[in-house]
Length: 207
Figure (cartoon, rainbow, N blue to C red):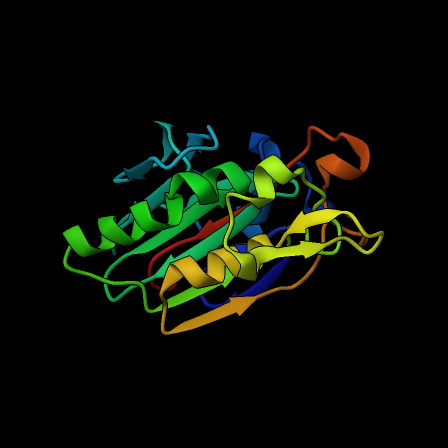
């Protein structure tokens, strides 16, 4: 796992399939946090849920919680896992190209605003990089020119890291810049069709 800030963790493939209860409990034990995480059934949309307790929070692609809330997590295997933190709240986002285009990041920012908070810091975890995220023109044209690029083999691609950075509007954004498709140690659906998933995990305050 990598932990770029207190209360922010991105798991690796060596941490297991984080969709399973056993893997979550194992990682939680190492982190000193509750294993009863709040999670969502991800839909590649723009929904946001507020978590007051652990467990399934329904269909959504972003979770936010307050100072006394549970650990929250989204699961990825090429899509972008993001953690965002404000003065009083912390959130996680699952964002593939559909979620980015649908406005999941903007939805989360509105949720912060409605709760009298704003995103100060954000962390973008290991995910498929612009070097490898091959997509068709029907996808690239839905992104601004600043996020359109080419793969290392010369086909059309989009830069999800940059797209997320531009939309977060945070004072500080940290990006892992680790491509899950071509670098070892990370689950990647595009690389091998795996059903296993990593997790972007966050919690408010110290464990």
